[in-house]
View 1 (cartoon, rainbow, N blue to C red):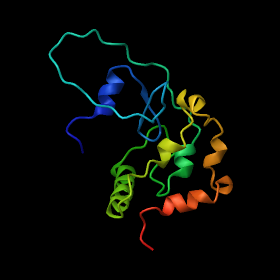
View 2 (spheres, rainbow, N blue to C red):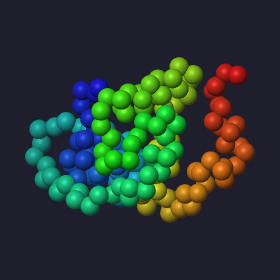
View 3 (cartoon, rainbow, N blue to C red):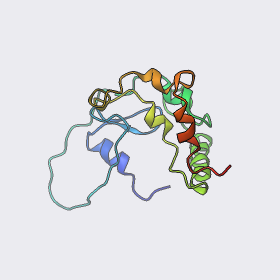
Length: 143
């Protein structure tokens, strides 16, 4: 557990809404953002909370999660869901691999998909992935 949640601060600043994968989704970059916060006593006019739910409820994050840490109910809850994701990240870290991030990769939300020509979400489906992806997935894993 973190002492301070940058994602929740960004939500309260009106920058986005939470998706099924518990990541903050923004209109511009979907879940593919990292937040930092500056704590200040300066008077700053706040933005309104974003009232439009950006999550499409498409279920891609749920379907692609390798440890089934996500459920298709409105908001993942309970220590079991969070714990599965944490354990997966811990296992990958031991192998020298960055955190999982598959739910972020497969999320169709965000205008950046158009900018980078990644609007065909089918490329992330297991039955159509190029053979090179298997090599990339094994990177850092000891045989």
